[in-house]
Image (cartoon, rainbow, N blue to C red; front, top):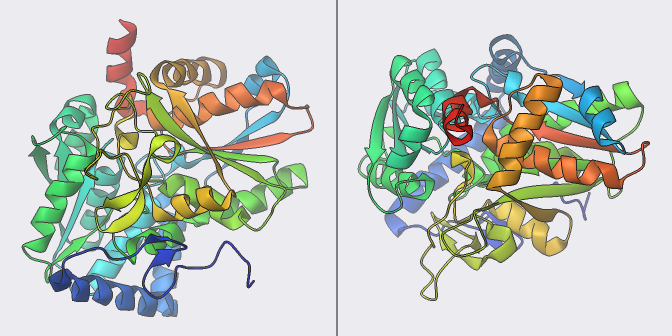
Length: 399
């Protein structure tokens, strides 16, 4: 396993050149405490057993791997399968890591879970986990996203979470992260920052990756059962990158399995019109990590945009930056119009309403499948369902 790409980051939290703990010295003991607590929890059979029991009996895992026969036959070419994370309790992959974070926070004696959210799926999942384990919960969300994702705001409030409207900056995901970090540093002894993706200071990129790796582990077993072999392609959308690395991680050492991460090119490739971080960004610092970043000449994050609130982030998980540099994963882009079209195609042909985030990955598969032979297999991570997006889509389509 010496040359394995599945290895954890080094002692300082770096995946190759990316990651780390780029934080004020006063915060370093807090994050180091989380790293130690996580390591101890992972070695505790009781912690693992409780987490795995919740995945099975509360979340509903394993999620199905579904052969999309209608879509495959319509497109011609490769067979398309969907890993149905949209069928999880709360409607997305986010519950996989929020349950782990909530159990760890409880174990550490914390009293409140705090987080940011863009599309609202992480916020709903964390509020759900907080309710389950008996912790207070506070979710910071950009003003624009609160309007776009109003059903998820109501869900968070019903679950007992306090939703903080962020009106600063671009009023979207990056600004929600900034706001949540500010709240966290005021009381890090009692608050556990349940970061919503494979981003932030060490150990969060590793920890969230580990919790999300269940997606790829199940997928591997399921495709071997259904097709008798591994897939040719794995496709997943990338904002911070948790659903993508969740699918990819188990297959990183299978060199014949190609992997495509799909970023949002939004309205155009002009600054402020997209969030194609790995495509157009360069390495820099954001939110306690060194990673690819859409930035200006002074190193400040640029404004970003995507039709999908969960993808409009100017940074990306450091593990993805490392995989890009190593050439193991290819990162492509899909624009707003293509994602919206894929949303409609999947809904009408397969009866599955995908999240707009996931629709970026669906659009990439729709482009790719006709170019391949019929014996090829593409697996798409359908990371979330589109209930939260239907009002916004209806407005866009003038329904």
